[in-house]
Length: 260
Image (cartoon, rainbow, N blue to C red):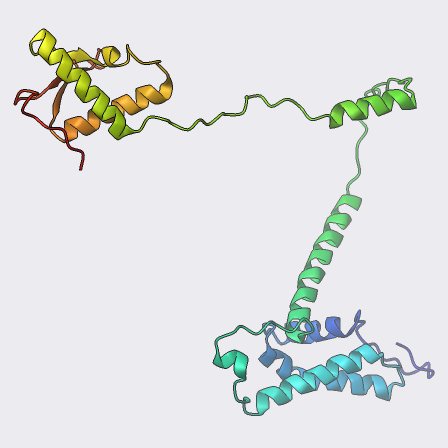
C-alpha cells in the first residue's frame, strides 16, 4: 500500500484471508502443518497484525478470530494436559473438531495447490497458438427434427435393454448323496448277483433315472464317497473313456454299507 506522503512508500504482501497469511508463515519457516508449528508462528502473525494497525489499515474480523485460535492453541500446548474424561477412559474415539485450525489449514493448502495447478495449466494453454491446417472444415449436416421425434429417441435410449444372458434358475437338489449311495449300492448288488461279478458303467447307473445335471453330479459324488470308504472299485482306461465300477470283496451278501 502507499501512504499519503509521496516520498514514503510501504509495500506489504497481499494475502487472500487469514488462512493464506498463516499458510505463508508456515511455509516460509519450512514447517509442517501441526499444532506445534502454528504455535511457533503465532508471534509472526501478531507482528503482521500490529504492522497493519500502525499503518491504519482496517483489519478484518476473520484475522482476529484466527489470531485468537492461535493464542488458544499455544496456551493449550504450554499448559499441562487435563485429566482424561469418560470418553478416553472407556476407549471411545472422540470425533475431531470440524473447526480445528490445523484441519482447516491443511484443507486450504490442498485447495490452494489445486488452484495454482489449474492457473498454471491455463497459462500454458493461453501461450499456445494453433496453426491452421488449411483443410476445409467438414460440413455439418442440417437435421430436420421435430420435438416429437426427439422425444421418441430419448424414450428409446432410456428403455431398459434385454440382458444378454437369461437369468440363471437355481433349483434345489431333491436327491442327496447318501440317498444316491444307497440306490447305487442296491443296483451294484443286483448286477453282481445276476451277472457274476460284472462291472457296471456310469451311464448304466443313470439309465433308470431321468438324466439331468444335478443327478449326474450327485451320482459322481456318491461313487467317489463309496470308493473313499473302500466299498467299490473304479476303472477308467483313458481320459475320456467310460467310468466303470464294481463291488469289492467280500461278497455283497456279507458286506454292509455304512456312511456313519
